[in-house]
Image (cartoon, rainbow, N blue to C red):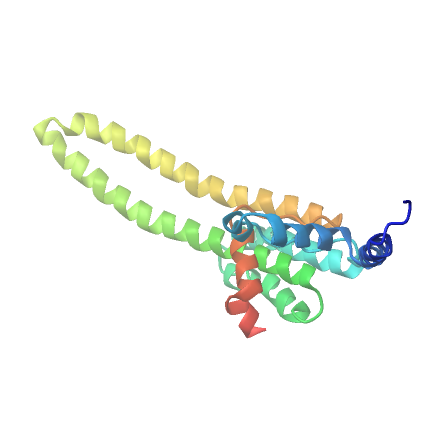
Length: 215
């Protein structure tokens, strides 16, 4: 027997699947596969993919500007002794507010850029102030300990700690500047660039956190 009673049903199912695949983008198909078949814990750790297939020139430009604005923050802060930083770090946030109902791609990257600048700015200031204060107190104690000979070891050791602290405070903004530059270049070329750790947190907020309810 050559007739297969199941053949029409199979053909119809294949036809439906084929037509569905034509209207889905590649990113959507990958996301659907991940949601269906990946382990739940692994799936929670993975940020959703923001499609770059239909990103317009305007979207790529503003996503890139959001990331590149860290140059404005760094250089204006340097030449104004930090007075312009409380203003310039909000450039990505303004871009987010403009595009929050227009483009998921721009929104995601603007929030990444804003988070990076906040973390870099607040982190460096906190490290410089708190770390510097702790180092100063430690150095005073080390100097006083000279009278009991222990300070002979503690003073140069604590001096090395101070040098390392200064290097971290100096290099942290440069690291943030490097990340922002890479992200600006990548997004301008329509890539979905992600900062380590920051991207996952931003994605969770957009998917079901505070930013989801606020928008």
